[in-house]
Image 1 (cartoon, rainbow, N blue to C red):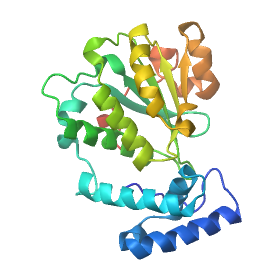
Image 2: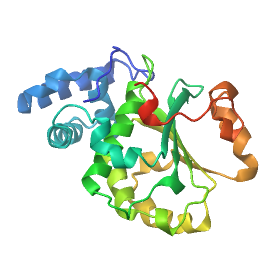
Image 3: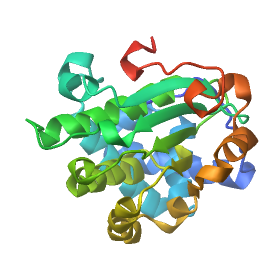
Image 4: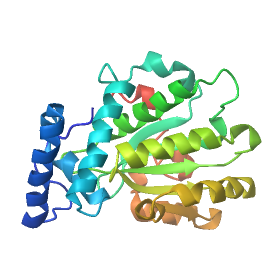
Length: 248
């Protein structure tokens, strides 16, 4: 279960917000004592995801606690539990953007869902990836950045079930964790799938997805990520490191 080791976030909302966090804590702990294990930053993310509505945020948070106990009964996802997904070598973790957010790189053309794919394993893989990104965050940081590289993406990589599952996990159980997603090298076929998925992405999250034209790729990425933190394949200096080799 994601925990933060710091006592103040990168975007302090002031005393009024923290008072609401305290009220929310009393509310959720009365209904599920395991909420005591989690810090105020986590509660604040759920609160912000529901526009500071304590009741709605509490409901969302309690659903998260129930989901976590069922989806991650050991408290973490091991490499072996998601070995089939890791073997595709499609997700990488390295470097930080200029705001101190860890950067994940996903190669969409390496995602294959029709050969022995188990949906439960894929969902566990999504949790595995998000937890890796979160554990890489420096103190005071709460979000991560993703470069979604869609070069070569085709019919064999199209996975609407997986896309909906991943989006549900991210929105419902990891609110306010996503900082930005750069969608690069997107083919026209992907845009058809995107039109199906887009209406199901909440309004706060939609603005975090940025499509980047090939001609603007390097300058757009360098605006957010320093060259020494940018992968070599995008004109930077860092080699790609598979997420299971990140050491986190």
